[in-house]
Image (cartoon, rainbow, N blue to C red; front, side, top):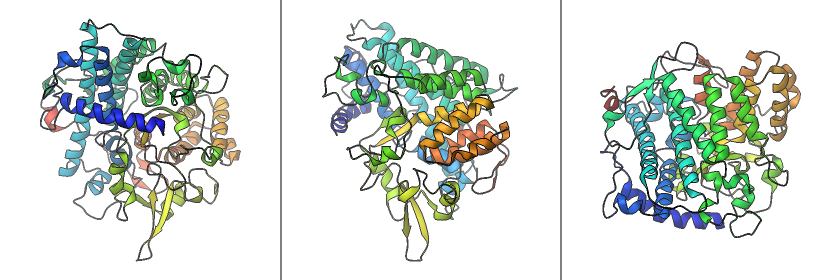
Length: 498
């Protein structure tokens, strides 16, 4: 509750700043200061730099990015996770049909593209001013600000690559992919598409630099419990309150997790395993794990903050105190636009085999409602919470579970079963299935099921399908994927510059 109140107060103030330095839809990449706020004033002191970086986090948490569109919305439609509207003019109908030429599809895809790059340019503004500033920073904040900004820049380009770039694999190095924006500009003509290989080189360059800069991140000293409770004293406590709440900042372990995701995406299994292990093996000074898999006991805690987004697993998430307003028409209303049938969910979660799956038991993630026509529909509760589980208004972007599933997929088969067993025990699943993973195809077939159960509403399923170039979804419903479906089109307003 302390965290929520403090962030809410700061959010309102910084939102005003963001509006001053942000851009409207009519100005492609315009992040020039507006109104009474001048850039020289904004970056005149340390607090200005902090506020400017926080503005980027506010952008990420807005509905146009991870607050909706980049997480529970467009990627989940592509993965066929929501019931498909019968209205052939609707966005969900056309996205689910992979019709990217429909007016609403084009509009939604272009908006997502723009919002990603507007956030990138905002980060470049922070980085550019850091290079020329004469401000003296305290408490190591210059390295933290630069590390977070560089890490986010690399990570957001990875997200863009996964959405708009080619299917990873042999022969794509020289294929045009996406622009990699490294300067502060409002000119979309500066967004020049470069090759897949060049994008990858720049992503890992930024992530490597961020990792080095964040070597004194407070998350390496304090536990997440300590850093999420600034009112309490403990040895090594940061002197600057801005350094708390590291799970909603692009911290040192978010960089490690991003590198695991990056190497997994490009097919470098050795490095994917290396960085996933570094996250899983991270320890606090008392020897406890820095991040822990959620279990049934996690949901049984009587303390305030018991939640459905598995906060204990978050390497990085975005926070928006107004998130429930965004979620109301998606999940809460009787005519919620994003829901799923009871039969689909029972099949997806293998409920007859695993009735005690911690995510699906007792209407935990799914609330079954019966309507006047006797139809039963499931409403998604991961982000809205319930009377039992608090809504934290946080959307996970990088989570510990992903590190485990990367290890299952990329480790030698002789080692993979151990990580899978640990993961499945945490989710209260039957572990006898581990013995059936004897080939790489067995692992892939199982991962299709586990990714859906684990990341429902988080936007990861579509990336899984694209990475492995599935020509057909086989679980829980069959769906043929047409050629070209994995290549979201670069918006027409941008392509004229390439």
